[in-house]
Length: 252
Ligand code: NDP
Image 1 (cartoon, helix red, strand yellow):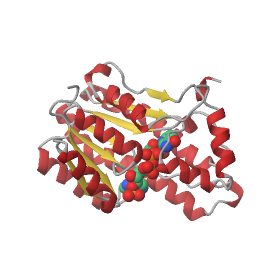
Image 2 (cartoon, helix red, strand yellow):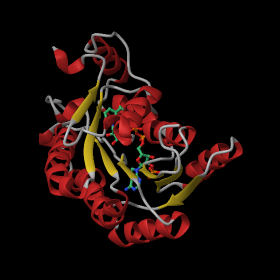
Image 3 (cartoon, protein in one colour):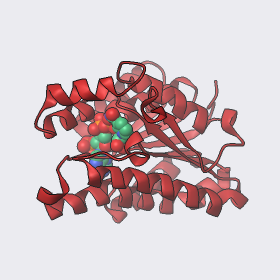
Image 4 (cartoon, protein in one colour):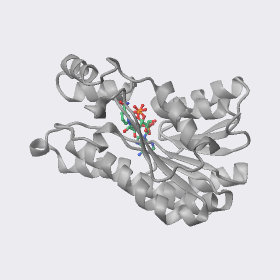
């Protein structure tokens, strides 16, 4: 078991990649706290994992709200007494050309994808310092290459990679590692919602698959395995790194 006894917090943990990471971490012996806004989706996920014998809790929180984040971290500490792993995975991806983008949507993207990462990290750092823990921030291939029609989303993912590098330097002396996980197109509801948002769901899906040299989308479980590497001591000399798990998307 690679995470035996470790305490892991996964934001956006009620579905998709977050749910897969929480499941893999629990299967590897971690005590997992999943968080997201929708308890109606998150509670059954945690319940199923508890039924399978794992220590998994769901706590509802909006990670764009500093008071809710503070309460969330306090709840993790009062339940488990420590925090070893933080995965900043919560995110949204409304698509729009820049010219027609609603300014409120721009601000919402920054809040959900970037400010949330800052808030959770800020309140987790004192506890991660105690455990010499680690942080994983979700970037994307779109944080490395451009994404016409999704410039605002791509900017937030480039921000995740930049934040990762600076934070890795800031926390290295404390033995806290910080890395980014950058998925390629991964088959989740989120991705299908993004396909719909582009206005040509089938065409966009075909285009995206064609741009992955491996000829398919990734699976949430494949992202979870990469996250396990970053979260565990298998990556003990890896920090400030953005790990692309993208079927070759950015190799071209
Ligand atoms: P999902 O939509 O399935 O998961 C996103 C999660 O974020 C949901 O659990 C959602 O729950 C939560 N969330 C969103 N906003 C907030 C908020 N304000 N507070 C708390 N939770 C929030 O997406 P994926 O699993 O596909 O993606 C996960 C991450 O991976 C994202 O950061 C995404 O950008 C990134 N990624 C995904 C790729 C893909 O192809 N799927 C490719 C590259 C990167 P709720 O709405 O209930 O709060």
